[in-house]
Image 1 (spheres, rainbow, N blue to C red):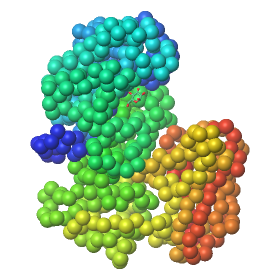
Image 2 (image 1 turned 180 degrees about the vertical axis):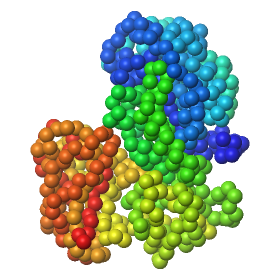
Image 3 (image 1 turned 45 degrees about the vertical axis):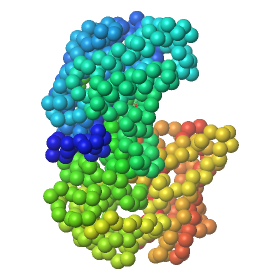
Image 4 (image 1 turned 30 degrees about the vertical axis):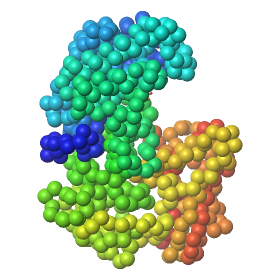
Length: 563
Ligand code: GLC
């Protein structure tokens, strides 16, 4: 770890360089298969939940194994849920008997976790929630109420003060019992900073742990932002970390008997590339099984991620946002000086290529490329550059994204060109580049873009009047066969999901089939073709029939020249 994480001159330096961490959601709720909100979602009483806590034995819990797994996957830090909303504390606390040292595992899980992270050279992060469904007064008054009620303190100020003291005492224990902590990760703040007396607490935390970073859910902005699920659309100067689930992109515990729900590793790597390309971190969540072991599908995901990281880490650790933004081929990160390489004023740009080609055209660089190399093999990549046209000769690979390091003598300028044909004549119209035509008749946002390095996803397609369109340029005219890349895991009757694609006065129709599992994208070749002349065209994609449900999540439309 010391080779990549240099001595911090400012507190955030290690965090900005680390780029990749592991989030762990683990607790009594891991026994149920209904997420970490199960106590609330399934209306489980405090008494029944206590019974459940007794069955939470953590037989296989081995903090060293967790740390080794995270490290092998290329993560530089870990964040553990020391207490989620259910109030069960994973440490030996004096504030409540509802803790892992006294009930269930009968071990101080936080101690074992912190020690293991340190032994394996990982930075230590503690997640802790303000919400506490087990705290007696709170449980009595609020637990089953509407979430809006949670935004009110107790009517009785004495009760409120007692709870705030209890919450502060928990944080104080975490700050004083386990040595230096690197990140404190607040969650579940329903009340205001004043009501929690956050400033006072954070000032004390700063005195106790002067190096520690604090996220933005403590009631004040803290040291870094924590977008959840969705990437910020553009890089920001402030440090940020996207937290994201690895199972179905929706649940923080793993549905371990449903293998179909695990996100493909390539999608997870796409999130990592995208976060780094925008100057942020990815905190990727895994929810171990109740016994403490990682579920087999999680281990498979982590193994693929680790193999990729071993080859491509240079483009991740210490890398900054790249110059290209999101392009049809992928995204980019950059570094102004690469260790061991003498390049005064030189800049290395890493292209994270998700849609490679034997001859890949990267249009828009207004600076000369000095050399190009593929990180997977370490070998030089043949290239030619004419004006803004850079053409790379890429070997085929199964390890996506393929990362190409381009050396420049200076900070390169990049001027994006609109959508053009690739060298093989195809045109890829990605979700990232689409214009969304969505009516907000009922005032609610409908169709939206979830942008990412893989082309993005158009989601929320529930209304027949919503459609998307792209404008693109054809330089080599001819006949083109259309297909779309989509995700549709719901086995609805496909007669209820029909669409029409139209361009240059011609239309092709299809119904949307199943794509397989959640998060998995398939390509559907439509029957028919378009004849396109040289020039600029606008292609529209519209539903014609849309029964209850979602048309699909759309990643791209691809036009291939007919051979
Ligand atoms: C969401 C979930 C919460 C989870 C958190 C992680 O807010 O409701 O349970 O811990 O995301 O960021």
